[in-house]
Length: 485
Ligand SMILES: Nc1ncnc2c1ncn2[C@@H]1O[C@H](COP(=O)(O)OP(=O)(O)OP(=O)(O)O)[C@@H](O)[C@H]1O
Image 1 (cartoon, protein in one colour):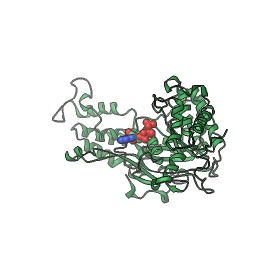
Image 2: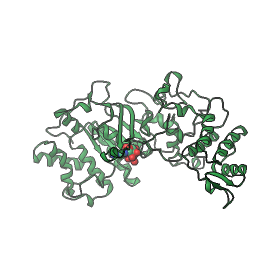
Image 3: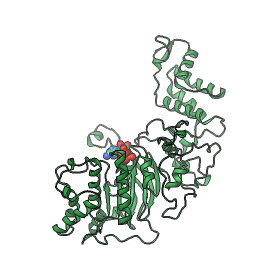
């Protein structure tokens, strides 16, 4: 079956040999809060929500690039901005070699036909008042493609191709299951014979059994119609199912990108490792092993951490070079430091009722060293080497006078990490350059194997791939100090 209509055949020339179909370069999308007239009259400064903060990647024709990361990392905003459904703050997106943000008139119309989106939620993305025939036909009518008869024929072809019956043309979305509705969304996205689809969590709202069917359909459609996909998902098993390459996104930035087999078998970035670790294992002998899961939430993109954005949760945060401390102990001290910096400890509730009392912010009742010991027990879940234990106690002693700043400074002075000073660029060879970086957590996830490891750009699964982490940064790749954020 052909999906071509009289008007859409041949729309959009294929890119020249070796050129990516989509090239994203330094894309930024900030949303502004406190930016209304009233806010300005009240003297409130606008706050930038840095949803997408300088991402770059290519997608080759016929390829599926997966964009993965936790909720709130900026995946949907990246997809919508590169489709020009949102205006960018900065950066460039090329489609077939043309800057998408410069397109006007017929060129823009052609781009709108060639690049389509399938949204996550088939329940809310379909107009409940329209029949599915009308829904799938709508893009053809908007773009004035073909005669009415041709459009009707095309809708029938599309519905059959996505596994629905033409008998169902006059039914409404609520009469269909979640999987069927997503098939309707896919048929609508295909109506104009596009080259490129952004698939934004296309299976997240579906039952697991239905997910695989929809992913298989997308896979088949890609081969049949030479489609190129950007597949957005927080679910690594979905990414693994159909992606050639994977970009891992954290708090507005890409932290690792490479062939899917490579990233799954040999993840470099501690965030990628943690994402893989949090996937449930199928094999029983793997179920008992110690899991280093991802703790805490993604920080707010209104005020992202300085340096590497993952460092506030990273199990491999790097201690200063002159300090000999194991990884878990250093992580615990950094967690404590963050709690102190965020004033996130309730001093008044330390100890038994009435054991310690504060007056004007100072410990008025109770022994100071006992207060420190009790507080330490509450905020640290492990023993520290004697030297570090003493430093932590000094910091906690400052809290007996509610001097949060002095407490934070004591820890900052001693434990400032390269991870907070510099934002590591996405570069490097993916070869670890720091001692102690090599105790990776293993990645046998028991999930479905990715396909062949070679990619459209010719790289093989054995090759190293770019990663944004100080554990892998070579001196030549380091961001300058002025780059730190
Ligand atoms: N219109 C908006 N105004 C302000 N902030 C926004 C807006 N849209 C998104 N954001 C914020 O930008 C960040 C990135 O959101 P985005 O939806 O792109 O993330 P995501 O990785 O796709 O997550 P999810 O899967 O939950 O949608 C979030 O912190 C979100 O709250």
